[in-house]
Amino acid sequence: MKELRVQPIKNGTVIDHIPAGMALKVLHILGIPHKGAESIVSVAMNVRSKIMGKKDIVKVEDRELEPKEVDKIALIAPRATINIIRDYEVVEKHRVKLPKEVIGILKCPNPTCISNSNEPIESRFIVINDNPPRLRCYYCEREPDDIASRII
Amino acid sequence: MEFRNRDIISIKDFSKEEILHIIKTAKKFIPFAEGKKYSDALRGKILSSLFFEPSTRTRLSFESAMHRLGGSVIGVVETTTSSVKKGETLSDTVRMADAYSDVIVLRHSQEGAARLAAEFAEHPVINAGDGAGHHPTQCLLDLFTILNEKKRIEGLNIVLLGDLKYGRTVHSLAYALALFGANLTFVSPKTLEMPKEVVKECKNLGAKPKSTTVLEKAIKDADVLYVTRIQKERFPDPEEYNKVASSYRVDLSLLSKAKRNMIVMHPLPRVTEIAPEVDKTPHAVYFKQAFNGILVRMAILHLILGGKTR
Image (cartoon, rainbow over all chains, first blue to last red; front, side, top):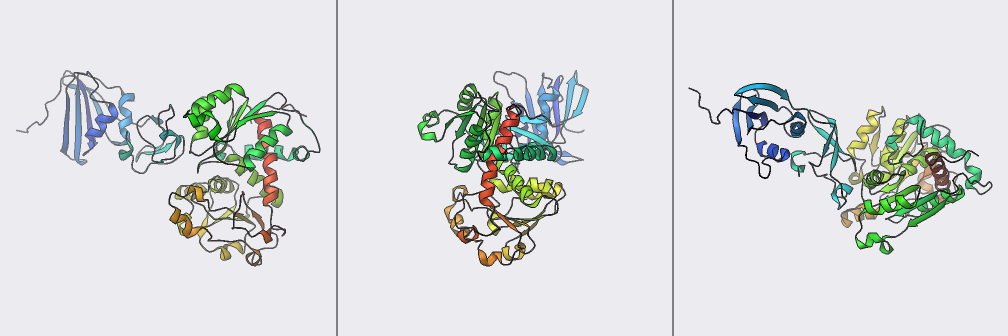
């Protein structure tokens, strides 16, 4: 019998096909766990996958994440899938899609960019390519090479 | 084509047709810039001149342009006497200037400063240089100068020389020249090569830019030689600066290898990269180029502030 490392969830959201080792960054982008939140979050890392070799999975119980909320993880997990679970059944499934702009998630790699000063603004990047993700700073127009390392 | 209340942040915000319209408008201002005719097209309008970095030509020509059109100028010329010294953010300074004037001209040491200013200001913002970023009015006056001297840009062999890595004028200029169909050659020391993104952008516009470190070879077929200063202030490492500081010098001996009608341009200030002996030759157009700055800035102010037609 196949052993289940992480139990299926009754209600909530499963984020699947996260590149191996990126699960914690995905949680960070999603702001999980929220302060005071009580829902159970399970993380499985380096799970065997037919398509990806190895992958990470995140399960958030009793919370249905809005596509808009989750789409920004496409920055580091462009092939991730979002499954909404109700009563142990997958009722919705979609692939993440980057929004047109990514605000307040990354730090611009240019040390002399105005977004890295004490101005009352959030970092802002224009998405110029979905997969592989390519971004351009709205302010200084620099393109970060390593997006994952720029996540705030 | 709508210019009224538009921010002027980057040359990339403008189409070829819009750029040509600005240049055409600029030409009409020649007698006004020379003081032969008087205009009060912008009477009652106030320009805020916020220069957080040293500038002579850009600041003076913007202020002259505004005065020549009958408007007035208020401004901050050094940060030591302003509230910036007290730690005020740029956004707060901009909000204040926005309340006091009809247009803001901003020079700042940080890239993206003008975009930020445009977000906070209701009135139009003109970028007069943001760190190693953009300097669109310099680009426009460079295009104006080439068109005025050569009557075309398409098909011209244009050499961009010097600090192509940190020099803000050459990035926007390379883009604009590619947009207009020039044949580009980039000449620089290896460590100051044109950034890959700029080369890629030029290629996307259909240009096939060449890169070399040898000026003598590149100059033979050139119609325009655009020289830039190797800017000490942009170097993070002074040793890197010392290695390349006097890599190239344009002098009479070099010019003897060039076409007779090749023009030499420079955004100024120059240090040692153009010998003073070149000034008297017909090749030198850099002082005319500096004058053209007033024309282009008059045109922009007139267009975005909706100046009365004469």
